[in-house]
Length: 206
Image: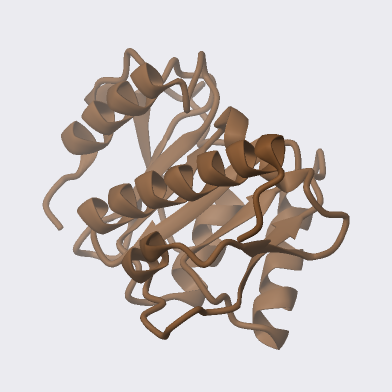
């Protein structure tokens, strides 16, 4: 895609307004036509992003372009590069810190949390009637490459059923073949998570 920084900055502002990227939380990336990746620089307020708040890295996360030598790529860069490695068609990867995502991550101690059989699953690629879908929930680690390594191990054994996963007490990561698709996936996951939280309060069956 053409230089995605303007669209990523606008998306950061939108997600900030939604309460999904408060302060410096979360990160956004998109793949350029040459295979390099534009990703948010570490420590940037997502409600105030400009083109200068992104760093271009290669497929291994090595810095190719940045405004200042002190700028560092997002701490979650290894997760983004793992996604692009595992899903060659992915062109965007988005990571948010919503309240509902973190609540849903606490609904189970297992590796997968079951998702309700909602119509919204069709938007995540599950068109079969009444699909049984489990969303991966990885434990959080201070050393982020450990999360990326575990992600690869789990995907090798059990490819994801939907384009996303949770990191417990951290947030949602999703990806798509375009920035628009990835943005839609974030919104669909958010709807599903909000339903799950409300259903838990009301003790609804799925």
